[in-house]
Length: 475
Image 1 (cartoon, one colour):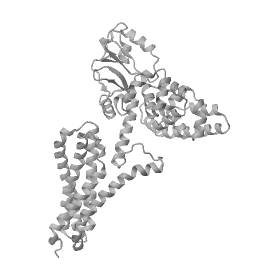
Image 2 (cartoon, one colour; image 1 turned 180 degrees about the vertical axis):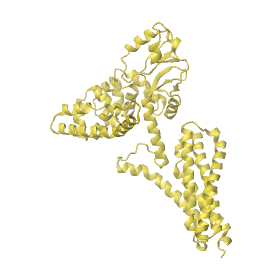
Image 3 (spheres, rainbow, N blue to C red; image 1 turned 135 degrees about the vertical axis):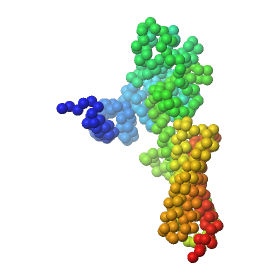
Image 4 (cartoon, helix red, strand yellow; image 1 turned 45 degrees about the vertical axis):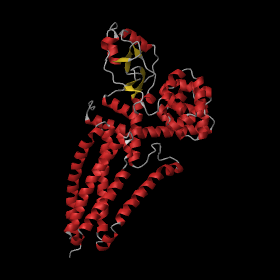
């Protein structure tokens, strides 16, 4: 008996296939690379190109990147223009720029004409200015790309493409469909058609489904949606991604300050933005401020870009040591304090990092702003006190049972309460203040929070121990 659609057996098989898919793709790329290298070694360049172009463009770019410089130089001049354009669109920015620089000006211009305008603008922006200028002069469609070069890469203007189909309110559904037929759209063409007035201002949006089911002579204004979500050219790419996610959009129109339609951002560009922003935030939490660093980055670059934050961490650690040094005398009298001071600092650092992660995420999703700072501080302060009491009580009782000193347990518990209160406030307020100063909230890395909680924890714990020294030394 065959399993029915939607049965657990079918679902299990689909999940297994999904889990195996990345492995299968890697196997396909590896086997293709073997074919390409064997073909190149025997001088069969066309066979190597045929094997490469059978791959999906994304896999093709990965395979091309795995080839050495000699193999790339043998293949690149013989790739046709569309395949070269696909390659440049899929390669990482630096690799795409390197490939582009190895093309003649005339060939590069033809390849850029074949690419989507936003992708072509990205490549041109990474080339030396003189090389980009020569390529633009040779391009047939330079007028579609030049406006995009004036916008920073990480803004809506830098993400948008000028390839879009526009309609007028007075056009009929039949005329709109005929316009689509003659537009020679790419396979990943538009899901939405935008409606503009005589001044080219955005006034509505039409879904393909609504267009198809409309009666032929119905004017576009009758079935368009006038409530169009749009972005201006200068807004940050992270805000673009948030807007598209909030309203479940597969494309977002971009307008100027007067509402004139300039282009559109597609969901594939936003997926790249989400990956880039997530990588950036993760790296900054780990005190790495270069999102281009990867596991295979050259050693010299890895060391140069990772070392500065290690120097900063060294300075904060030395400062914490200086705080401890001010209590040297008490260690001579109650040496056991040295055993427990790291508990206070460690738990405070963990609590602070938790608050920091929650705050940065909330800011990124637009859930809190600087206007919410006092409400957020109160809420986190209560959370910190409850956490401190809960942890401090257990730790204090544990120390009492272990060391037989109720006052040592009391000092440890009170220090945990105080330090965890400080930690959650610092972890919450710092990214909010950075946002208010128009800085990336992710700059409030765990190193900063850890430095504060270390110093505060040592000061509270050892300060309380000093105040209660006679009780600690009672026999």
